[in-house]
View: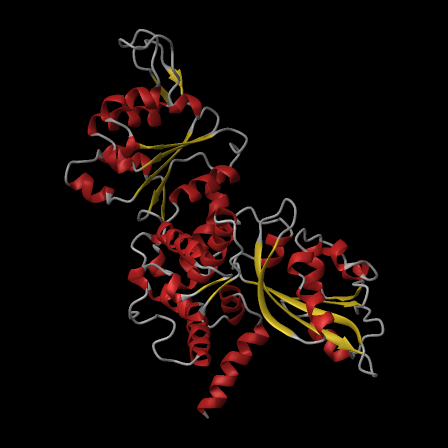
Length: 446
């Protein structure tokens, strides 16, 4: 369907091109009434693009922080184009979405500004239209990593079963975030989510903490106390760091999983356990079984569905996405507006191998946000161990930015078996952009 452009310049060919780009594009007049809206922008607004015509852009898109991040208004008032401004769009009831915005004024024949056009592109990696429209339940997992993307794709199916899940991953990779996502996507989402760190419980208190106790079970037990299994009734129980579970307790957990029942400490009646159990650990349970430190039968019972979460050093392409998300939280935590991070600081973050994974990145950025006197994090604001000579950055290694883009695009196409559409989804770019990156580099070589 051809969309009306009003009095703004545009021919059929350019209008057709705008309809078919992945980026959201819209144009307004001097009163910020929408005069053009492409299909991608209409999907975000959850409106037929034709119905957006004649309404204010604020009304159409419903962005609550519209005035504070309006690059289009600045472009029109200053009568100049503004390119690649990174902002975070907020809509009520929807996850925040980091985007890059470009805007330009539209001039009449006499030179007066009669409106403006704006393009915005998702930086979250999590699906722009679905995230901004509030349709994406997995909004915590913005990623460009193929392995992690496949895990996220399977989460809804895993959540719909009631099977035990074992999450494997290094400390700081976000195992509890995955556990909470499974709970939210499951039929138990209206029930409680209870997390317990097995490594943090004293061994002598572990049984009573997990299964509860009856009055008189020991000297100070003056009344009944429910355990974590009871608190998670009709919901989900996360047994974090289950590799730290004492051997004697492993048999009791196994019985609760097999029979879906348990007995409180000091009790004689068996209570049903209507609980979905998710276990998580950063240890090698297979090796622990071989060493006799972990029960083999419990290991098999836990391993119905096994999810290995890759460490951050194996997916450096996710660092920029995580940086934007963490900085959004830092703005609230340190009561200052951090809007950008310098290329030098970002290069150093990309080169780091993150033994502490996402948790370490969060701490680095919070530290830098506190030290930064302005709105930009510079290299000098990073912790001391990151300010020295950087190791080889996996995205740079002395190459130009054009070479980096070309290599990233070529590798994505190779990973996707030559499927350019799949490569575009992985990279978060349009087919035209991919074609331009690969074609321009080939021209330079020629």
